[in-house]
Image (cartoon, rainbow, N blue to C red; front, side, top):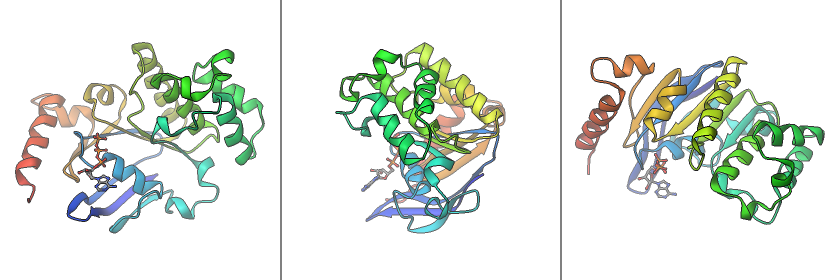
Length: 238
Ligand SMILES: Nc1ncnc2c1ncn2[C@@H]1O[C@H](COP(=O)(O)OP(=O)(O)OP(=O)(O)O)[C@@H](O)[C@H]1O
């Protein structure tokens, strides 16, 4: 289970996160939805220990990321698909990660197959990959250690329609197998189609949370999103 407990994060005069609390249960996909600059990436970075909160705690299975035993195996992360070493092949990226986690080489080929990178593509350097191929490699990297929690920042960026559909099915299967999946996006329709729960964020604050049906009741999810984020903008102090 993933829990944000009154997390705030300030960068000088910018309140990137303002008292954010929500939970992602095991076996569910939670869509973390907000417009550009809402605070999604900051929240995910705090969760995986890349950024220190100003106050509050973000935990996975009751511990901070740093407190977990072998966090890279327990928690799969894809925060920036472009961060992979451009001079290594996809296979090398996964092989190094598998070695670090003490996993057999066979797991690398399994992951390349799972994410749809052919043997030939796995042998090409990442610097020559399209964004969609990097996203696929990033997913393979995140899933190597069979994590119990999966944290994905804008994972469908750059994927073609088949890739988006594949990603939806993959996330559903992982959640059905017991994984806690937290997926950030500003693409409402993508989130709506895969998420069990949605947490809407704007100007660093949680604006609403519930199932897609609950949040969209009466006016539709898109209008609810637009109304809530507009209202949050009006309420924000200069
Ligand atoms: N390192 C930083 N230094 C200063 N301000 C930052 C830093 N990182 C983020 N911010 C600010 O914090 C706020 C939240 O940014 P964040 O990247 O978390 O938003 P986001 O919801 O992920 O946006 P997007 O959808 O555009 O990626 C923004 O106002 C951003 O300018």
